[in-house]
Length: 229
Image (cartoon, rainbow, N blue to C red; front, side, top):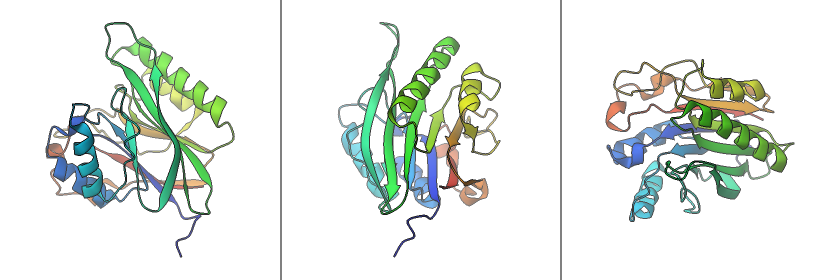
């Protein structure tokens, strides 16, 4: 019987709309074997539900289809965990600006502790990024103040950015310090995971993905951690 208190592997991956080699991206996810995959830039074209369903199947994961309606954030889960209360929440933007939202859910192994997770893809506008981080943290805190939490995604800025600092001021940065963009020649670390309420964490080892040709799967590299609750 699976250990309900075993570490949860949480990953984050910007898929660039599955415009690259989607099958390779799925193999990357399968190699990582996450319990929860936080996704940014899920496809949103008329046939995108079929593309995401196929991607989830090839990744060995489940996708409910209830999220990624607003701006392309969503999440997938393994068979080892259940997700509840999954929803997209709109973030305030201007009338002619790209829509922004985040995806939030509660996940747990059967018989294990619950964990709140959120997938974010922050704006290209620095001031808006800060506003959105504050909104995400305030809304999650209001809904699940007592649960451990992981927020992850594409922040569109590095660790010297104000929005990054706002996240790091409330949560602990748990992913490792390595560049994630662009995948072909990584120079910038703009994808990360932050958490609170965990007992221990082990950042993912990028050597796991050596030789996979990651730049053909997406323009971002994935990040992941093993989280002990």
